[in-house]
Image (cartoon, rainbow, N blue to C red; front, side):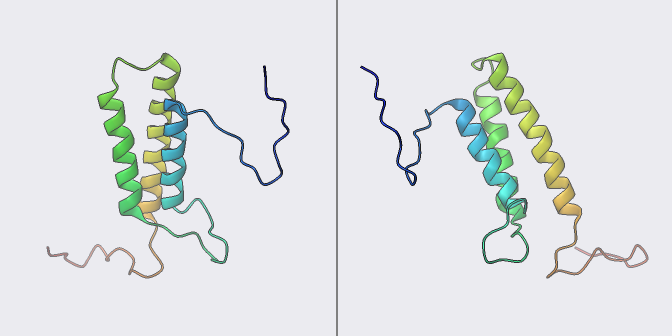
Amino acid sequence: MPDNKTPEPNETPEIPASFSTLLLNLSAAALAYLGHTVVPGQEKPAVNLPLAKHTIDTLEMLKVKTQGNLTPEESNLLDDMLYQLRLAYVAAKDQPAPDRPSAPDSSEKETF
């Protein structure tokens, strides 16, 4: 017998666990680390490039480990997601951070 109970206003509806949901959650986390989410109470979004890179690398690892076991829709979702996240990562990496100096002048010699 189906449950026709109306969810309470503060009740979160259950979302079934699926590979696509996992991908979407990881993608949302990566976008947040790239500064695409504003935290309430902060003027600017927080950027954490190492965590963004780690999350993108995790998605790449999932792609490798699940190769041949995904539906065409899941495979396309993962490929598109990785492409978009990599573009966003490069764009965020090229932006000078407010607390670090901008890239050195080409006339200055950089040493490592």
